[in-house]
Length: 207
Image (tube, rainbow, N blue to C red; front, side):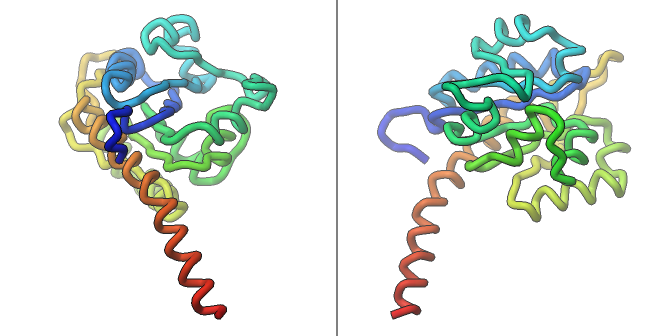
């Protein structure tokens, strides 16, 4: 966690997936610019663009949106550039299909490529009904993502995202998401000191 007055997350990249809850979740993600993220970028999956066009997403988030694996950023593929500059990557809303794809290491979309290329903490915010969330296959995928070093936010039932039928989906309340991002940021800040300590221990052992 930064203590110099700067935002806790220097560069936050949000990965948007195709879900009815995307429409109500976008303002929550955009609000992370207030005191949380110094810079915000977004990656939208093909399914996300079926719910909202890229320009609408950019307008709500006030941030550039990358959509194609062939997109370039600073003369590099977008997944490479964003993977290097991002301090935290937040996948929200994370659908069951996204959890499965990332748990299996798929690389067919820009969103999947970015998760594979991330050099920072990656957090998933699952948004789905309780029956789907508790399905054995979804739980296996969530467990695999955690085993791979990623964070998966446990749905809390206090969500504000809504389905087309008007029902609230669990686990995506503004407070939950802000606290989750701050936790990811703290883990990112701890990583260099942990690596340095491990390196010092290895050097002492070798000596």
